[in-house]
Length: 339
Image 1: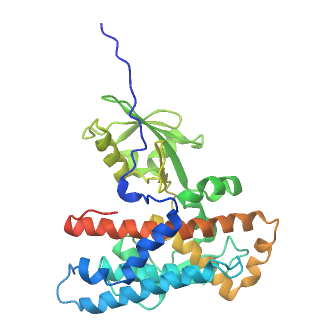
Image 2 (image 1 turned 90 degrees about the vertical axis):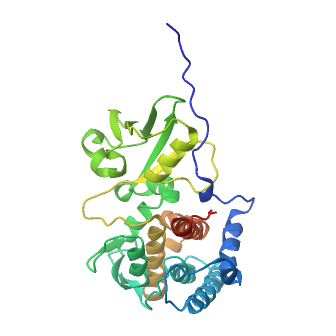
Image 3 (image 1 turned 180 degrees about the vertical axis):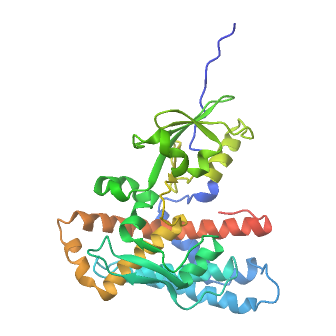
């Protein structure tokens, strides 16, 4: 009988369309955004829908892209007491621009969210209503109603890039599942669910429905992929992971992916939407209830450190997520290559 050495695929399985290659990725991603405020739109984009005033949509997107850039610039030197408000307006205008360009939806003038003050900053929340944000949710096929509320703590707890820092701060509202992937060449693919609670055996299928029909449990926090359509090549595994899980957005050499754990009664949003909601709550606090930010702005405040961390991550990754959504819509409609 011959003995074979089991060799693992080496790499992160990341899709290159999700990455920004640069020594300065923050400015690089905003430079990509800036192009949508130029005549690039008239040269490269064509409407998918018939009988729409496409030139008006282009002008709408161009000016809102430029506003997004200027609001972002205005926030650069501001403190926690003021920075969330211009950053929120940057995200609002960027969302409106891409709504006009991709799904070709002229968003409503309202925000689509209402600020509801809580007992403290983290329990304050956004309530869904008719407007730009819910127009965006409609284009992403996210079901919503006007009774839905999302607290700042839940929004922050669903942000992949903040997961490690937030786990140290508040485990009760953390919804991110970190997953280590090991794929054997011509062999099995296994997913190790890191730091999964002890109730793994009874909860993983409901908590991670994207994996429930293609995996079986092999042990505490360990899943074996059983999808009979999964190929053994590196590219096939990368495509499988891209459809089922969330990739890292920075270049990495380890196969670490992510998922959002589902909980009953908690609305499931897109990855970019959690950044948006958290920035809306913080921006609204700046505008209407700045007293909520006083303790967070103290030099020794842990939550202040966490929120400063969030602001930097949001500035870096929200525009990248919007670019990813836009280019994926371009691929869907026209088969063109993305970022």
